[in-house]
Every structure is written in C-alpha cells, then in structure tokens.
Length: 555
Picture (cartoon, rainbow, N blue to C red):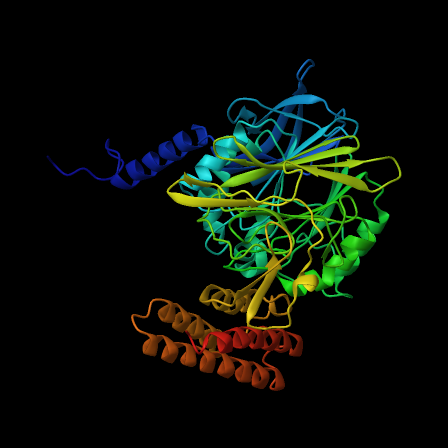
C-alpha cells in the first residue's frame, strides 16, 4: 500500500485510540452501577413501644432507605444516608403493633419483607436468654433452631457472642449469618463477654451493635432498657464493678430510679457457680450483691460457664425464704463445648450441663423461668409470684427437699442434672473450719464435707485468669505463664502412672504458684500492674496454694 500523509483519507492510530477511549467512556457512563447486595442483616435494635432501629450492611455503597408498614395499613419509606452500613430509626410505632419492613439500596428492595412487633408494657412478656454461643457448629445450630421455634418478644445474650477473640472478621460466620432469621424479627440485647472484649476492648462489638449508652460516660458497653413491665440492666463484667466505679454508680442509680414491677441484671461472669472451669467470680459477687439486695433485683442472668445453674433465693450470700432474695441464673449453654460441675454448692437449686436457653414469661405479678434444651424439653422451671406491695414468693418443680439425677446424651456430651428446693443449709452453717475440705449442702439436708481434689485445684488456678480487679490490665506475661505452668503440672499429676511422679508434679505446681505470686507483687511495686490486681491475684493464688498443700501428701 502506498504511503499517504496524515489527513489524506485514513484515520490515524492516535485518533482511533482517542475515539475508542471516548466511546468506551460513554458506554461505561451509560451502564448502570452494579446493584448493592446484602452482606449482613437486616436486624432489629433499640426496640421500644414507639420506636425501633433497623440495621443492615451492603457490599457497595448505596442510598439507604427503609419501607415499613403496619400489617393492616399503607407503607411509608424513610430515607437514610449513603454508605455500606445502614441504620434507620423508626418512630411513631403503636405499642404491640405488628409491622412489615424491607430495606432498600438505591430504591431497590433488598429481599422480602420481615415482620416484627413493637414492645407492649401492658401485655405479657416472653424473653429468651442464652449465652456462650459464638462458634459455628452443631451445638449452636441446635440451640438456634429451638430459639426460632419458640414464640417470644425479645432476646437477651449473656456474652461470648464471638469466638475466639471478638475480631470483626468473625462476626458474620459466628453470629449474623446463623441468627439471621431470628434477629430480623426479634430484637437482641447484647452483653460483652470476655471473648467479645478481647479485640480492642470490644470495639468490633460496639461497631456491630447499637445500645442506648444511657449512662453518665456515654459508654455503649453497659446500659439499661425497659421491656414489658420489666427493667433490665446490662453490665460489662470485663471492667471494674468496684464500689465508686462508673459502672457501680450507674447500676445503683439506675436500679434506684426504676419503678418497674420486675428487675433483672445481666452480665457475663457468674458470681454463683458450681462449675469447675471458671467457678464464681467472688470479686464481682462482693461488689454487686449488696446492690441487688438493696434494690430487690428479682433475677440475675450470667454466662461464662458453659452450662446451666439456677440458685435458690439468696440474700447477703445466704439462702433465704422464697421471695426474700435474688435468684441467679447461669446460662452459658448456647452452643460452645459444655463444662462440668463440681460438688453441689450450698446455693444450687438446679445444675445441668446441656445445650439450652432460658425462657422468662412475665405476666403481671407472676414470673416463670424455664430452661429448655435443644429438643424443646423443659428441664428446669421455677415461678415467682408477687403480691401487690410485697416481695415475690417462689415455687419450683421440686416441692420438697429432694435431689434427682439424670443422664442423657446431647450432641455426644453426657449431661447430668441436680435439682434441690430451698432448705435451711448455708455455706457458713456448713463450714467446718478445715481448709482442706469443700463444704456444701448435702442433697437430703445437712452438710457434706469432701476432701479437696485435683479438679478443685485446677478450678482455683483457672479462676485467676478472670479476676475482676485485673480486667483490662492483664497480668505480666511471666505471671500468666507461671499460672498456666502450674495448671499443666496439676493436669499431669492427675494422669500420673505412679504416686511418686504425682507428688513430684504437685510440688512443682506449688512452686510455680508461689513464684507467680511473688512476680505479681514485684510487678505491682514497679507499676506494671495495679495494686488491686496484684492483691486479687495474690489472694487467689494463696487459695490455690492452700488446696495444693492439702493434696500434696496424696494418699
């Protein structure tokens, strides 16, 4: 082909390239943007008789809006912000009214309608409570399915929603995906567990959930709300509850100000537990029980121990007559591996290691608490009845002082249960002054004194990792390492093949405990940990050391 100069009848390569780019740009500009897709939710938060907040996430930024209607009325659309995280508050609800809603992205519905109902203070209340659920698996699925099959008004979680460490990447597989069908129709009020608090002091948890933050420092970590004719206070037991602390002052003022017929408190670490893995948080018990007694709290819900335990009515750390004290419920069987129990405690009414949740039904002056397993069986039940102007009386499934034991298999785990009605036995009444015995109420009445065993020693050592005074300011690495070393040596002693080796391992465990106590004291003097943390660790270590000394001879 003969050469032609530019402009003599052919389009130059540069012009062709420029024209192609222009055409491509025009096509891209004319092409519609990819539609946003749901990645989380929708889920309900902050429900009241007159309002609710609906939250959802999308994969790309879009204009958020919510279409909502009464089941028997016309729809309205509420516009929100543009982004990938949408939260739209709805006001003007009718108490007890039923509503259908659907979230929109750029005006396009994201799925089908979901239905919920507003709170109604004049109607009976059904509240579902569970905890320690945040790991995908058969246990979580079985409890979730039973929750879905149980009509309710509200859900409360006692913490450890996200294993292993509360990281943002784990929230969808551990919580939002498995519970999607539940939380689109029922509001869930969350509580911080130690695993949830592990990542950035709970920041991913605060990013995911909306709480009232109705406390003096505006913290989302603890709060209170009304539901039905009940008042609920949620406390963060990963932070200080000491008298004078912000949480303590909030709890005291909040309980004093509430005129609700029923008062509940929720936090993660149990303060009355017969479990052998964590047991009772004695520091929190010392701090908060006087408030529960002073302001007539009806029930306290906790988790952390992966089992179920309900106490007899308690006041001032003693069993009291029905209606004269607070009932404490540990509900940590939401799906994680189950934990065993040690000897029955003086305060225990029913204890069982089984996957479960708790159902609370409040109807006027009557409250019924039930523990329900994954098959829908009610395995424990108690009822409180209030007369106008008086404290509640109590009835249980056991009308006499009896103990029953059952054995069943649930998800491959053996479960045991013990139920006891109130009696006159108390811990102090059973204390024989011997530090080498565990003093508890005998099932048929009276006292039981059992020698300290290896399980008790392991529990003593384990408890030092969750000392309330040390939360938020972990012990130095060496202190923690020595405690872990001591526990490992106790484990080895339990499986020793001969007496000589068992004694040697126990001696090493005691040495590790003493070293950890000394290191904690040094760290406190050098300002590497608080004096209160060091003192709490020291007291716990001395308890473990005492138990270890009792075991050292080994018969």
